[in-house]
Length: 54
Image (cartoon, rainbow, N blue to C red; front, side):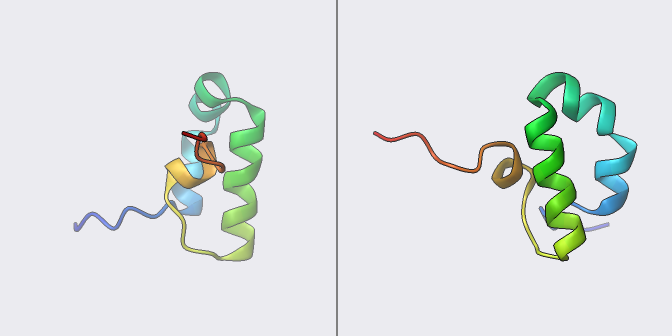
């Protein structure tokens, strides 16, 4: 299995409790939105949507 880097619905659903516990409900809902929209995104793009300003 190759590493693609994008999240899948299987990943989001099987690890839902972990995502909510460690990253919060907002991150989980953003992941769900990405899955429903069928966009290609990495988990980090979902968990941290806006990079911190330098």
